Image (cartoon, rainbow, N blue to C red; front, top):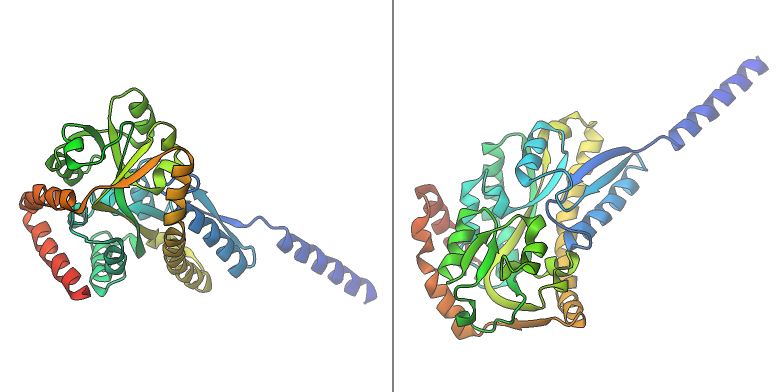
Length: 331
């Protein structure tokens, strides 16, 4: 009997040791084009810590920034199929799958950073995310973040709207982004994100309009020393997960991840807000000049782009009017 008890004790210790040293389950999280040091990546690092603590080490998050696993369309399809559990992507890129989201890229639709952040937390935008889930049932939306308005980042210094005229500005493949840049008087030049730095160096493009965090984290400041705030187009990121992957999780683990992803969206807001002034100070410490276009020029720029809504499809025009009403209701 003693031998049996001893054997049971040994087996128990072996099993405990096996559990203690078992490899955690790695969960892939794509961060789109966010480079190392980006606020949303920092929030994801904190999310990884949160998941490890909540799960007792059962799970760990494999963070995949800077397009590690492919373009946004590849990632989106991977989320739908379940091969990519979690993803963070700009609404501009997601408009390929949800055309109404293009409306959010209209210049001067949002009057301030605060208005944009509030909009993304509104019941109206929550309904937009539910509509996205209905259109693509393989995804689950958890929220969205704003990283502020795009800055015109350039090799030469631009101060006024007149300075921007005719300049070759890098744009994404988003149709409305190209139309917006053209309406501002610039020459839209489609360029892959990975080629932006070399294109600036080789003078293929004169500038790139991007969120203020991107130049510091992607070392754009090595070439582009000037940053002009024109308050035209904000950058929004959406966080979503694979419904197929969530369904495969044990119920308690699924609830944990759902709670954690909502926490991640809130954490992203916190880090973005805390680092907005820091990133400008950092760029200036690297010899960069950060300036802002005058209110008069902003008004002139808004007038130049005011008719862009006419180029929208009927469904998008309907959504635009709904967005305008939602923004008015925030006041």
